[in-house]
Image 1: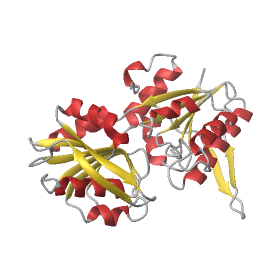
Image 2 (image 1 turned 90 degrees about the vertical axis):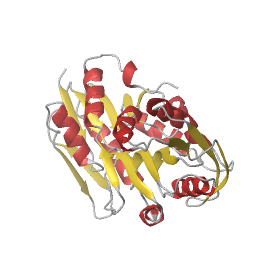
Image 3 (image 1 turned 180 degrees about the vertical axis):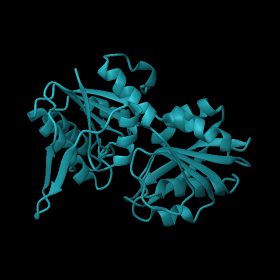
Length: 311
């Protein structure tokens, strides 16, 4: 079965690097918008009987990028693709995995249903906000992780007396994986989110006194969680400097200003999303080899066990 890769517009550079790693060129497609802002998608090659992979993070603007993915899938299915797999390095709506107030939508479940309805048969995602999302999909979800790549990248940068800090309880499992890989102790911040951009901290479990911080999380969005964790740790006696490690660097809203005011030596993130221009000390870790390996194995019907998240 012939393999074909298409990319949406969310992160063309990542898609091109994955294709190059596989020795392929991206399939030609036309993405345009009507005057009323509707997205129009047309693929420019035959994919009848092909094994098709759609590379598109649903990063901001999430609604537009999600719609592009769905339309790419529908166009490929109607053109006769034999098998459709979505490569979604960053999965938007992942934080809407439950009803917080009792009358709000469960956006993650709705998006999972939309992806299935578009004809996609398998999803490959990276470091999801919560592993409970796997239960939302009636199709196969392959959950990859960039933790080992990020740990390898950050290891030479760390002072001897470092400690891994989980900025909230949701990041505890992730922090344990980093702590084990880096052979470091860990601490946990107790946090409460009061709004989309405001959080409150209620103390730290673990001794951070005299240590340099390695703050880890699955994503950096507005930076409020990172800033609150950093300030809480400094108040508890850690050294006033830190390295922040995260798979997805969104840096939306006032994140750059908020985080730029802190004594953070470096932000180490992957290229799962296209990076906005920023003056933050940013180091990118490439995902091309990991995603290309996943595509190669899926195309050849080989196991992904050693690159999947197991929690």
